[in-house]
Amino acid sequence: MNALDSGRAVITGISAIAPNGLGVRAWWDATLSGRGGLQRPTRFDPGLYPIQLAGEVRDFNPSQLVDGRLIVQTDLWTQFGLAAASMALEDARLDPRKMQAYEMSVISASSSGGNEFGQREIERLWSKGPQFVSVYQSIGWFYAASTGQLSIKYGMKGTCSSVVSEQAGGLDAVGHARRVLRNGARMALAGGTEAPLSPYALTCQLSHGLLSHRAEPSRAYVPFDTEACGYVPGEGGAMFILEDEAAARARGVERLYGEIAGYAATFDPRPGSGREPGLYRAAEQALADAGIAPKDIDVVFADAAGIPALDRIEAEALIRLFGPRGVPVTAPKTMTGRLYAGGAALDVVAALLTITDSVIPPTMGTRELAPGCDLDLVLDKPRKAPVSTALVLARGFGGFNSAVVVRRTG
Image 1 (cartoon, rainbow, N blue to C red):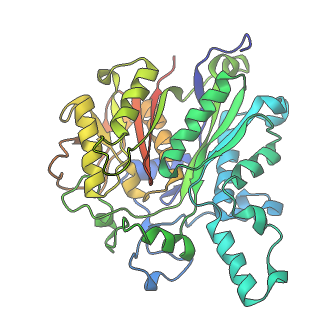
Image 2: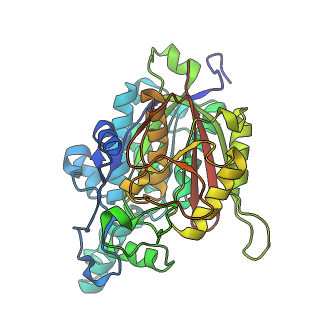
Image 3: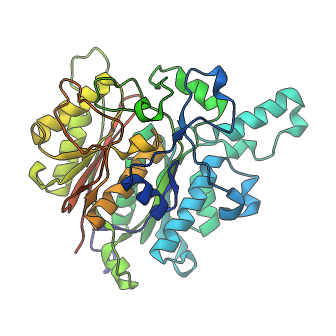
C-alpha cells in the first residue's frame, strides 16, 4: 500500500442507464417523480409469450454513445456498459490516459451475457450458413466481453474480472473493486449492466416461473404486497468510478458521492437442509465489516423479489436485524423492473443520491403489505429524511446473497 492509500474506497463518478431515464439526472428525476418505464417490449413481438411487460431502455442510441467500431463487435449489454463507463469517467473528471495502466482495474457484472448478439448469429448460421456468422460471435456473447472491451478501450491493465452471480453481481463487483483498491490499485471501474430482453433470453427466464404475467404496469411488480405475483424483467444498469480516498483528493477531487464502507456475500444452504437462508447473514456481516450497528442504518434498498416466499424471507431478515418497521425500506426498481446484474448497481447509485439529496425514492405499486412483511416501506412518493448510511441488498437466482453499506464521506 503506497503513501497515498487511506484504505477507504470512495465513489467519485456515477452513471445510470434505465428504462425510465438515460443518464443520472433524467433517471433520478423520473424515480423521484414515481415515473416508471414498464411497457410492452418493442424490439420483438411479445404476443407469443405469457409476459407482456418489460423494462426496456427506449431512448438509447448506440451510434451516439459508443464508438462505431465497437458497435459491430458487441451486444447491447456491452454497449450499455461502454456508455455507462464513459458517463462515469466524465462525471469523475478522470482521464485514464493520465494514469498508469496497471493502476486501473475493471470489474463488471453480468448474468446473461450477449444473448441478443448470440441469438442473431445463431439464426444466421441455421438460415444462411456459417459464412454469414460474424467473426465477433466468439467474443460478443461471452460474460467477460464488457470487462474486456472496457479494459482495451481505456488501457486499464490492472486486475480485471467479470462477476456472474445474477442480481447480486452488481454488489459483488463493488466489493471486488474495493478489494483491488486495497491491494494497490488507484482506480477501479466497476458496476453491472444487462440486456436480457431478446426472445432467447426471455424464454430462458420463463423457465423458472418467477416472472409476473400481469399486463397492468402499476400492478405487475409489487414486492411485499398481498398480491405480489413475480417480477418484471428489465435492462440497463450503472458503472462507477471507485478510488482510494487519499488518492482521489490528491488529484483534486472535491465531490465524493460516498464510501463503500461494508460488503459481504453469502450463499443459501442446500434446499431441504433446514438451515436458514443467507440474506440475513450477508446484511449482518456487511454491517460488521463497516464497523456499525443496525441503529446506524438510515435506509435499506431492498432486493424486493416480488415473489411472496422470497419477500417474506427478506422481510424476516430485516425485522430480525432492525425490528418491525425499524428502518425505512425502499425498492425503486419497481419502476424499472428487475435489471439483474444492472439492478443492484443502479440501487447503489440511488443510495448515493439519497445520501446526497436527503430524500428516499419511493416504492411504486405496492398497496397492502403482505402478512409477515411489517416494514416501513416508503410508498408512492419520496420521503425527505437526513441519510448518512444506507444498506443495499441483492439476491441472485441460485442462492447468491450480497450486501453493501454505503456511507457519507467527510
